[in-house]
Length: 222
Image (cartoon, rainbow, N blue to C red; front, side, top):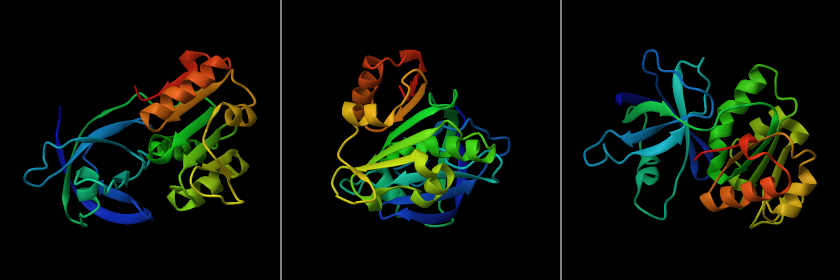
């Protein structure tokens, strides 16, 4: 497996605990929207602490982009990533992934699970092929919604938000359960893309299949 040492070109705040990292792009490095790589920090003691992150910019950009949520409850990789600065170095590796676009359908994401869908939706928007796609996004509070303005601009009324820990008249309140999905999904005989915490993925996949979805059309990171 190839290792590429890349410099951080730019860091932007996305939400209160999510940052966008733009990185140098190795020559000839390409990926499929929805795919990821294993990343580590190029500092002593951290080089082999690999974590998977999804690319969020498109292949035609002159940089790589990672959108990363910080988990500050322990002294781990994301916590240290959020402490880095422009000019610091990361190590990226070969591309891998199971999530890629198969056709119009429903994207269902929980929290940082939105990241594999960012590049897919950006590519579809660029290609004017978003018709027939709907995004259902679960978060704890409104301030947790990643790229809210951009996703709203792209998807309009096909961007559905549900919050579990905050009542806000602009959004649904609760969890993505069977009743909610049956209200929001008009056709279970289509493509589904699911990403989020493991328990959420398992529960949603079970609901989709029990309501008629073909398991072969449910795409998720295995």
